[in-house]
Amino acid sequence: LKLNQPLQKIGKFPNRKMIFTISPASLADLYRHLYLKIYHGTSVENDEVQNSITRESLLRKVAAFLHSEFGAAMVIDGVVSQRISLMEAASEFCYRFKNQLQMKSDDDNKNNQSNTMTSIALSSTETRFIDKMASVNSSVKGDEVMEVVTLRHPPGRIIDGDEKCNYTATEAGQTPSDLSSLLNSKENLSLPMLASSCPGFVCLVEKTAPAVVPLLSSSKSPMAVAGTLLKAGLWDRDSPDEVFHVAIMPCHDKKLEAGRADFAWERQALMSYGGVFNQTNNINSSSGMLAKGQSDYVNEVDLVLTTGELLEVLSDAASRSKSKNHVGGDISMAESNNNKSSALSAFAIRDFLETLTTEPDDNLDDRDSNLVTETFDENDTRPNDEPQSSTGNLDDSGVHGSGSYADYIFRYAAWNLFGCELPLNEPLPWKSSTTAASSANAAKTSGVLRRRKRRQETTDMREVSLYKLSDGSYSCDAGNENSIPVLTFATAYGFKNVQLVLQNLSKNNVGMSESPERRRFDYVEIMACPSGCPNGGGQIGSAGQRETPRETKERVKETVSAVPIIRPKSNNRSIAFKIYGNSEDVSGSNGIISGGCFGHDARRLFHTRFHAVPKMEISSGAAAGVAVSDTNW
Image (cartoon, rainbow, N blue to C red):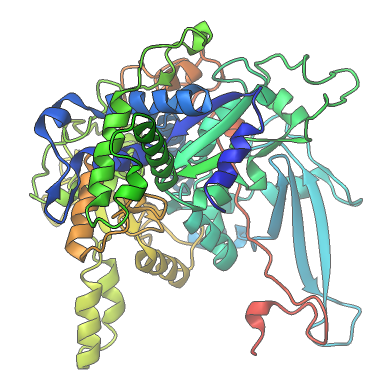
């Protein structure tokens, strides 16, 4: 789609409150493009400008632009929803880890395993399960019958002990216990836990690796969390029909994520599980009739724009502003043949943003008068404040560019599970992972295999471990050979590393049958894009300029330097703690939702489900019913 087509969608809802969420990676790449980048000897960097322009001030300038261009009532810093996603993922990991310790022997665990049934989400509260089995009444070899069950269930994550979980099915003969087992399998508590905030990786797993689906973290991505906060009335008491939520993201695949049926709420379910706003003006509670113009479902995210699309809108606005003021004409026409147009356009956009006021608009409601909602805690590290690690490797900061999942959860788990509080002002000792080298050890005499081994050893996967030392204390430094690793986390960015992780999981027979002694990693932060979200396909990137691998690496490093680093155990200043009502290590009691992180309410609102997607099949002819992947052409 061309850019003007999604933007026209915004104009179709003039009576709805326009709210934008900006991903930290998107804002960081825009900051790099406007204030840090250097193109072919033309520096856009200016010491005086850079000293006066911070990430927060750029966010306010972008918010002022979105307000003037699209009438944005609020612009949310993605750090807000990112913190909630991190808190939920960290609590989920600790729950899984403790569950693993309570498990019996490996043989008993194998008996509990069951095949993952393929399923399709119809909404956040309705799933269709599909089971193909061999026909017992047919004499034809390979003949199969299909059993389909459409199940209505509570939204989000369901675990043992959940109350008020009512299941209904459209087919007769199903008992409640049969239905609940479809959603509440012990496989869903297995380790290693895999990050699920990357829609590209999730899509790959759902379609090609059904056995790995239970390992995906059920915590929603920051984009989906922001949608839940807005549409479920947790942020404000607006009806979902009063809000049009636009997310600015670093990845095109986020548009696919926004369209997932798992993130579409039926209105009655939203009233039941959100339940903090008054919808009497939009739905007749007695008759259940929808108001005029309403659909049956509410999407958490209405529109997704990439960082590159945001830059295009900014460039167009700067061009129009320059033409109106008769200063040098249209920049897009005047500089189209100039090899430095990208750098000069950055200057023009900066000048245009300087003309916008960041003061509150008198036309906004009191509750929206700030326009920008941003939350930094004292323990959050601002760009360029992260100290260099003891290894001297400046690339260690790269683990923070995609949401800080591995770093945050590792610190939280070390403290929650083992009582080891790692210094918040020191980076973790990430090191290059050695997992890749093991696959090349089959033979050592072939020159070809030796070359493959050298190439595999250059993998950019990284890992960090927590060790129990001989004196009973815990440290990330192994100390001596008597130290026992109790936690091992890894990051895997790029399709090569994604394949490597999936191959190792398949080879090791993933699931509950794998004991902690055999498990290589406890958690893996996986992103489909090389270098993670700062290098996402929707980012500004090189802006059409050709890059060498070294230039690409430097560009990504500059973007990462502008991404804030979130730490656990902050001082309760952020909106996240207002949601839970207490610190992130204690079950909340005074917040908007009860039960704290990974509590009953949080699992309904901030968690989701993933599916082993049925294979695409040929629908007609002699090969009807045969999976396309099983067909030789």
